[in-house]
Length: 168
Image (cartoon, rainbow, N blue to C red; front, side):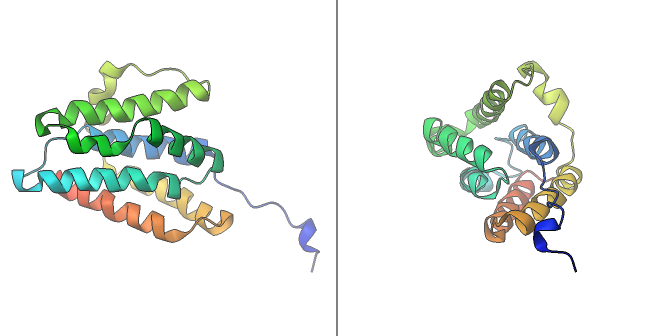
């Protein structure tokens, strides 16, 4: 049995693995913002978005990315959604997610994305298929990095609730 110091380093998930599907999920949901299947779900939609976003810094695998997410939420709090008229949800949510993503792209020297392409790019993507891509990376990070599973499980609950609210 080799010494533990000679064991290979675990293969931690890179942000290039979990980042794109996580961003896709956020954009897919934002593309449906303000379109609850029934007006009865409008307040639920708001609460689910706020909870989903507030959990992000607790379930993102990268410590630096978690910190940047927390900083973004201080500058652009998702709780501002409480003061947005329902007729403006779509515009507000797509802009909020887009601006956050563009902020990350600028910080990581990735190219900017044309905002006019959001609906065409994310409007028809599958949440379930994209989640299947994301899930193994987050679960590997939980196993290897000490992230706790509870925020991830809570995030999944809010994701499923929003999916139900949007009928997807």
